[in-house]
Length: 262
Image (cartoon, rainbow, N blue to C red; front, side):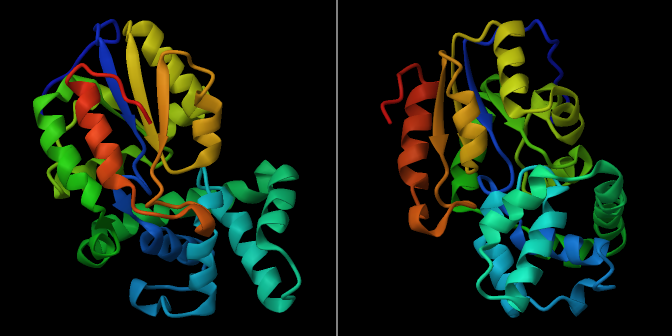
């Protein structure tokens, strides 16, 4: 994006690593629609019931999701709780995730991304209407234009839809600073992606903003990295709050050469 490409040995003194879903964009409706269609429970976006108890629970437990295959087990867990209210969705999800079988979920994963591609290409207007920018995006967009070399995107979402959405909302990031599903699959974690970038690009100080606690906890082991949670995103209800202004204030101080204190 933006026509500028940097090589892997480019030196960047300071870096900002951003998650995509739950930090820059609210994509819970899009992910639910794609999931339900990948499971062949719906055929078109207009058939999705966003007023249902099922969707409400999906929103409530969206914080459990990392890579796309997690959706398969989240839906199963929600289904089971609706049938049997005593079941704890989080406990059920973690139990199923620990015993996942690749051959069982691989067809779902393939169908998930094929469905997203189809919607993005053939039902583009409806698909894009399900993706809403957070207020945080507007401030980041302005800062990223001024400090383009500092900003990196690290996400489990597929690169094609990431680029499409970034273009739609005019967030200009350098192509080689975008790390999506393929890179995540190769490196197996955001920790490995970020640590590798810090080493190869000789980054002295960095900040990582994500809404998912598991990603943040793993990355806390990197000494030169400060982790910040986007509590406006997909977090447990008890922690949810809009701390975007505070985080942006610290982010702005950081890229201008100061240290974040959060």
